[in-house]
Image (cartoon, rainbow, N blue to C red; front, top):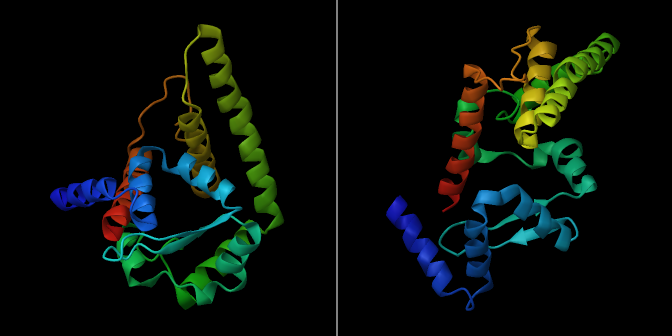
Amino acid sequence: MIVAFLFIFIGCLWSFKRSSRTRMLSTLVLNAHQLHEFATRVLQKSRGTLEFKGPWFAKMDFIITSDPMNVHYISSKNFSNYPKGPDLRMILEPFGDGVFAADGNLWKMQRKMIHSVMKHNKFESALEKTIYQKLENGLIPVLDHASEVGIKVDLQDVFQRFTFDNICMSVLGIDPNYLSFEFPQVAYANAFNATEQAVFIATLCQRV
């Protein structure tokens, strides 16, 4: 797989000026380390929607959109017309039959159940209280501490920890204190992050 990837990569660089398809793929590979920032810049230049065309042999043609109306149409209004398909189901296998990987009636059932919980008045008030509590006792003290002692912090890591704690407190009723002065390593948080990375790499390998 590595040899094949290098062969494709070198070939794309060699033909950078010869084909718009290979330009797209080589540009994507060169920006793999900053994929989210790269996608944001490209979508801004493309007015929110981009048709990506890869080499004919790689089956990499797809459409990327950040347009709110498109996202609503695809993910909610007409979701049944956009199934994940067998390839994506295989990539998302670590998530089992959860809402991230489900399709069809199974997805509808889970979505309906989640909506019934999230739209409940008691859940909304509890979530608001949980977020405020973690903001007051976690996020602000950590940022104040970093400012006082003059240390640099990765805001992406900070807010990832903040989000993880809020999810655990809201869904499981426990606070793992993933966001604290020590920036501790929590096994199940690391496992989830590793799963995300594995799914991302599997997506790229599947496409290449």
